[in-house]
Image (tube, rainbow, N blue to C red; front, side):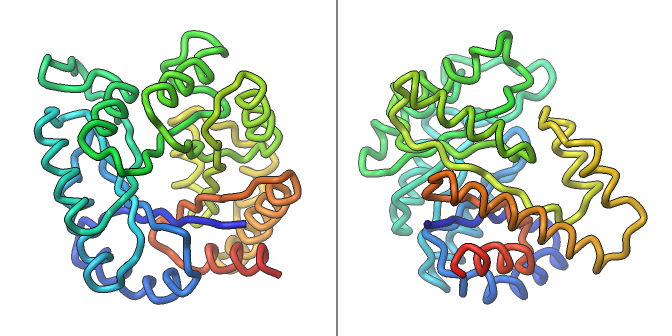
Amino acid sequence: MTFSLEFFPPRTALAAERLEANLPALLALKPRFVSVSCGAAGSSQHGTLELVRALRTKHRVPCCPHMSSIGRARDQIARLTRAYAKLGVRRCIALRGDKPDGYAAGEAHYASSWELVAGLRVVAPEFAIGVGCYPEGHPEDRSPDDRFAVLRRKVEAGADFAISQLFFDTDAFLSFRDECARRGIAAPVWPGVMPIHNPSRVFGFADKCGTVVPNGLRAGFKGKSDEEIFEMARDVACKQALRLQAEGVEHIHLYTLNQHRLATEIVRTLKT
Protein backbone atom coordinates (compact mmCIF):
# COMPACT_ATOMS: atom_id res chain seq x y z
CA MET A 1 0.00 0.00 0.00
CA THR A 2 1.12 3.54 -0.75
CA PHE A 3 0.04 6.74 0.96
CA SER A 4 0.18 10.50 0.58
CA LEU A 5 0.10 13.35 3.07
CA GLU A 6 -1.76 16.65 2.98
CA PHE A 7 -0.41 19.91 4.42
CA PHE A 8 -1.97 23.36 4.57
CA PRO A 9 -0.04 26.62 4.08
CA PRO A 10 0.68 28.22 7.47
CA ARG A 11 -0.79 31.69 7.89
CA THR A 12 1.23 32.89 10.88
CA ALA A 13 4.87 32.77 11.92
CA LEU A 14 4.01 30.42 14.78
CA ALA A 15 2.14 28.05 12.44
CA ALA A 16 5.12 28.09 10.07
CA GLU A 17 7.46 27.19 12.94
CA ARG A 18 5.20 24.31 13.95
CA LEU A 19 5.10 22.94 10.42
CA GLU A 20 8.86 23.22 10.11
CA ALA A 21 9.24 21.30 13.37
CA ASN A 22 6.90 18.54 12.14
CA LEU A 23 8.32 18.24 8.61
CA PRO A 24 11.31 15.97 9.34
CA ALA A 25 9.09 13.30 10.92
CA LEU A 26 6.44 13.63 8.22
CA LEU A 27 8.86 13.44 5.31
CA ALA A 28 10.70 10.53 6.96
CA LEU A 29 7.54 8.51 6.29
CA LYS A 30 8.45 8.71 2.57
CA PRO A 31 5.01 9.52 1.15
CA ARG A 32 4.25 8.89 -2.50
CA PHE A 33 3.51 12.61 -2.73
CA VAL A 34 2.53 15.56 -0.56
CA SER A 35 -0.54 17.62 -1.38
CA VAL A 36 -0.79 21.26 -0.34
CA SER A 37 -4.24 22.72 0.14
CA CYS A 38 -5.46 26.23 -0.54
CA GLY A 39 -7.83 28.30 1.57
CA ALA A 40 -11.58 28.64 1.31
CA ALA A 41 -12.67 30.29 -1.93
CA GLY A 42 -9.12 29.92 -3.23
CA SER A 43 -7.94 32.57 -0.78
CA SER A 44 -4.49 31.10 -0.08
CA GLN A 45 -3.22 29.97 -3.47
CA HIS A 46 -0.18 32.20 -3.06
CA GLY A 47 0.58 30.42 0.21
CA THR A 48 0.14 27.11 -1.59
CA LEU A 49 2.73 28.10 -4.20
CA GLU A 50 5.19 29.29 -1.56
CA LEU A 51 4.92 26.07 0.47
CA VAL A 52 5.27 23.93 -2.65
CA ARG A 53 8.34 25.96 -3.65
CA ALA A 54 9.90 25.37 -0.22
CA LEU A 55 9.12 21.65 -0.27
CA ARG A 56 10.52 21.26 -3.76
CA THR A 57 13.69 23.36 -3.34
CA LYS A 58 14.63 22.39 0.23
CA HIS A 59 13.40 18.80 0.38
CA ARG A 60 12.83 17.66 -3.24
CA VAL A 61 9.45 16.28 -2.23
CA PRO A 62 6.97 15.18 -4.95
CA CYS A 63 4.22 17.78 -4.56
CA CYS A 64 0.57 17.90 -5.57
CA PRO A 65 -0.87 21.40 -5.10
CA HIS A 66 -4.58 22.05 -4.89
CA MET A 67 -5.83 24.20 -7.77
CA SER A 68 -9.07 26.06 -7.09
CA SER A 69 -11.05 27.76 -9.84
CA ILE A 70 -13.00 30.04 -7.46
CA GLY A 71 -11.53 33.51 -7.53
CA ARG A 72 -9.05 32.77 -10.32
CA ALA A 73 -9.45 33.52 -14.02
CA ARG A 74 -8.42 30.92 -16.58
CA ASP A 75 -5.27 32.80 -17.55
CA GLN A 76 -4.24 33.12 -13.90
CA ILE A 77 -4.65 29.38 -13.41
CA ALA A 78 -2.59 28.73 -16.55
CA ARG A 79 0.24 30.94 -15.25
CA LEU A 80 0.12 29.26 -11.84
CA THR A 81 0.21 25.82 -13.46
CA ARG A 82 3.27 26.78 -15.50
CA ALA A 83 4.96 28.08 -12.32
CA TYR A 84 4.37 24.70 -10.69
CA ALA A 85 5.70 22.89 -13.74
CA LYS A 86 8.95 24.90 -13.51
CA LEU A 87 9.34 23.61 -9.95
CA GLY A 88 9.12 20.04 -11.22
CA VAL A 89 5.53 19.48 -10.13
CA ARG A 90 3.77 16.87 -12.25
CA ARG A 91 0.45 16.37 -10.45
CA CYS A 92 -2.27 18.53 -8.95
CA ILE A 93 -5.72 18.30 -7.42
CA ALA A 94 -8.40 20.26 -9.28
CA LEU A 95 -11.19 21.64 -7.10
CA ARG A 96 -13.88 24.18 -7.79
CA GLY A 97 -13.69 25.39 -4.20
CA ASP A 98 -16.39 26.72 -1.91
CA LYS A 99 -18.44 29.49 -3.46
CA PRO A 100 -18.62 32.74 -1.47
CA ASP A 101 -22.09 34.21 -1.00
CA GLY A 102 -23.27 35.80 -4.22
CA TYR A 103 -20.44 34.36 -6.31
CA ALA A 104 -21.06 33.85 -10.03
CA ALA A 105 -18.39 32.66 -12.44
CA GLY A 106 -17.76 35.01 -15.37
CA GLU A 107 -16.74 34.10 -18.89
CA ALA A 108 -13.06 34.32 -17.92
CA HIS A 109 -13.51 31.70 -15.19
CA TYR A 110 -14.11 27.97 -15.00
CA ALA A 111 -17.63 27.44 -13.72
CA SER A 112 -17.15 23.88 -12.46
CA SER A 113 -14.51 21.43 -11.34
CA TRP A 114 -14.82 19.40 -14.56
CA GLU A 115 -14.26 22.51 -16.67
CA LEU A 116 -11.14 23.18 -14.57
CA VAL A 117 -9.95 19.62 -15.17
CA ALA A 118 -10.43 20.00 -18.93
CA GLY A 119 -8.56 23.31 -18.88
CA LEU A 120 -5.66 21.89 -16.89
CA ARG A 121 -5.49 18.92 -19.25
CA VAL A 122 -4.80 21.38 -22.09
CA VAL A 123 -2.37 23.60 -20.16
CA ALA A 124 -0.43 20.76 -18.55
CA PRO A 125 -1.06 17.51 -20.45
CA GLU A 126 1.81 15.84 -18.59
CA PHE A 127 0.17 16.35 -15.18
CA ALA A 128 -1.66 13.64 -13.26
CA ILE A 129 -4.85 15.39 -12.19
CA GLY A 130 -6.73 14.45 -9.06
CA VAL A 131 -10.22 15.52 -8.01
CA GLY A 132 -12.37 15.33 -4.91
CA CYS A 133 -15.20 12.88 -4.35
CA TYR A 134 -17.87 12.56 -1.69
CA PRO A 135 -18.86 9.09 -0.47
CA GLU A 136 -21.64 10.49 1.73
CA GLY A 137 -22.69 13.16 -0.74
CA HIS A 138 -21.89 16.82 -1.30
CA PRO A 139 -23.97 19.58 0.35
CA GLU A 140 -25.00 20.79 -3.12
CA ASP A 141 -26.19 17.38 -4.34
CA ARG A 142 -29.80 17.31 -5.46
CA SER A 143 -30.07 13.52 -5.36
CA PRO A 144 -28.03 10.54 -4.10
CA ASP A 145 -26.96 9.89 -7.68
CA ASP A 146 -25.18 13.23 -8.00
CA ARG A 147 -22.07 12.04 -6.13
CA PHE A 148 -21.48 9.55 -8.96
CA ALA A 149 -22.64 11.72 -11.86
CA VAL A 150 -20.36 14.60 -10.90
CA LEU A 151 -17.35 12.32 -10.43
CA ARG A 152 -18.04 10.76 -13.83
CA ARG A 153 -17.98 14.21 -15.46
CA LYS A 154 -14.63 14.96 -13.82
CA VAL A 155 -13.13 11.68 -15.02
CA GLU A 156 -14.51 12.15 -18.51
CA ALA A 157 -12.90 15.62 -18.53
CA GLY A 158 -9.51 14.05 -17.86
CA ALA A 159 -9.12 13.34 -14.11
CA ASP A 160 -6.68 10.53 -13.31
CA PHE A 161 -7.62 9.81 -9.69
CA ALA A 162 -10.05 10.88 -6.97
CA ILE A 163 -9.49 11.47 -3.26
CA SER A 164 -12.46 11.28 -0.94
CA GLN A 165 -13.76 13.72 1.59
CA LEU A 166 -13.05 12.62 5.16
CA PHE A 167 -15.33 9.91 6.53
CA PHE A 168 -15.73 7.90 9.73
CA ASP A 169 -18.10 5.28 8.34
CA THR A 170 -15.70 3.00 6.49
CA ASP A 171 -18.55 1.00 4.98
CA ALA A 172 -19.85 4.19 3.35
CA PHE A 173 -16.53 4.70 1.57
CA LEU A 174 -16.24 1.07 0.50
CA SER A 175 -19.80 1.04 -0.87
CA PHE A 176 -19.06 4.25 -2.78
CA ARG A 177 -15.83 2.83 -4.22
CA ASP A 178 -17.54 -0.36 -5.31
CA GLU A 179 -20.48 1.49 -6.85
CA CYS A 180 -18.08 3.72 -8.81
CA ALA A 181 -16.48 0.58 -10.24
CA ARG A 182 -19.88 -0.93 -11.01
CA ARG A 183 -20.84 2.23 -12.90
CA GLY A 184 -17.67 2.11 -14.97
CA ILE A 185 -15.96 5.16 -13.43
CA ALA A 186 -12.42 4.23 -14.41
CA ALA A 187 -10.25 6.45 -12.20
CA PRO A 188 -9.09 4.97 -8.88
CA VAL A 189 -10.95 6.27 -5.83
CA TRP A 190 -8.65 6.76 -2.85
CA PRO A 191 -9.84 7.28 0.72
CA GLY A 192 -9.04 10.51 2.51
CA VAL A 193 -8.47 9.72 6.19
CA MET A 194 -8.45 12.53 8.75
CA PRO A 195 -7.10 11.49 12.14
CA ILE A 196 -8.96 13.16 15.01
CA HIS A 197 -6.13 15.46 16.10
CA ASN A 198 -8.57 17.87 17.73
CA PRO A 199 -12.09 16.47 18.25
CA SER A 200 -13.96 19.78 18.27
CA ARG A 201 -12.14 21.02 15.18
CA VAL A 202 -12.39 17.78 13.19
CA PHE A 203 -16.01 17.05 14.11
CA GLY A 204 -16.96 20.68 13.43
CA PHE A 205 -15.49 20.42 9.96
CA ALA A 206 -17.24 17.09 9.42
CA ASP A 207 -20.58 18.62 10.40
CA LYS A 208 -20.05 21.50 7.99
CA CYS A 209 -19.39 19.24 5.01
CA GLY A 210 -22.05 16.65 5.80
CA THR A 211 -19.83 13.82 6.99
CA VAL A 212 -21.61 11.50 9.41
CA VAL A 213 -20.01 11.36 12.87
CA PRO A 214 -21.38 8.38 14.84
CA ASN A 215 -22.78 9.50 18.19
CA GLY A 216 -20.64 7.03 20.08
CA LEU A 217 -17.47 8.33 18.43
CA ARG A 218 -18.30 11.95 19.21
CA ALA A 219 -19.24 11.18 22.82
CA GLY A 220 -16.17 9.02 23.40
CA PHE A 221 -13.79 11.98 23.23
CA LYS A 222 -15.66 14.16 25.72
CA GLY A 223 -13.91 14.86 29.00
CA LYS A 224 -10.68 13.13 28.02
CA SER A 225 -7.16 14.34 28.65
CA ASP A 226 -4.87 15.26 25.77
CA GLU A 227 -3.03 11.94 26.00
CA GLU A 228 -6.28 9.98 26.18
CA ILE A 229 -7.51 11.85 23.09
CA PHE A 230 -4.30 10.95 21.26
CA GLU A 231 -4.62 7.27 22.16
CA MET A 232 -8.28 7.14 21.10
CA ALA A 233 -7.56 9.00 17.87
CA ARG A 234 -4.66 6.63 17.12
CA ASP A 235 -6.82 3.56 17.68
CA VAL A 236 -9.70 4.90 15.54
CA ALA A 237 -7.47 5.91 12.63
CA CYS A 238 -5.34 2.76 12.67
CA LYS A 239 -8.42 0.52 12.81
CA GLN A 240 -9.89 2.40 9.84
CA ALA A 241 -6.65 2.20 7.84
CA LEU A 242 -6.26 -1.53 8.50
CA ARG A 243 -9.85 -2.17 7.41
CA LEU A 244 -9.26 -0.24 4.19
CA GLN A 245 -6.08 -2.20 3.54
CA ALA A 246 -7.90 -5.49 4.14
CA GLU A 247 -10.59 -4.45 1.65
CA GLY A 248 -8.06 -4.01 -1.15
CA VAL A 249 -7.47 -0.26 -0.95
CA GLU A 250 -4.08 0.43 -2.53
CA HIS A 251 -3.54 4.07 -1.53
CA ILE A 252 -4.58 6.19 1.47
CA HIS A 253 -4.44 9.99 1.63
CA LEU A 254 -3.83 11.32 5.16
CA TYR A 255 -5.05 14.77 6.17
CA THR A 256 -2.23 15.59 8.58
CA LEU A 257 -3.28 19.09 9.70
CA ASN A 258 0.50 19.70 9.67
CA GLN A 259 1.04 17.32 12.60
CA HIS A 260 3.14 14.16 12.58
CA ARG A 261 2.28 11.94 15.57
CA LEU A 262 -0.93 10.33 14.29
CA ALA A 263 0.30 10.08 10.70
CA THR A 264 3.38 8.27 11.97
CA GLU A 265 1.28 5.82 13.97
CA ILE A 266 -0.96 5.05 10.98
CA VAL A 267 1.92 4.48 8.57
CA ARG A 268 3.76 2.34 11.10
CA THR A 269 0.64 0.22 11.60
CA LEU A 270 0.16 -0.30 7.87
CA LYS A 271 3.79 -1.34 7.40
CA THR A 272 3.82 -3.79 10.31
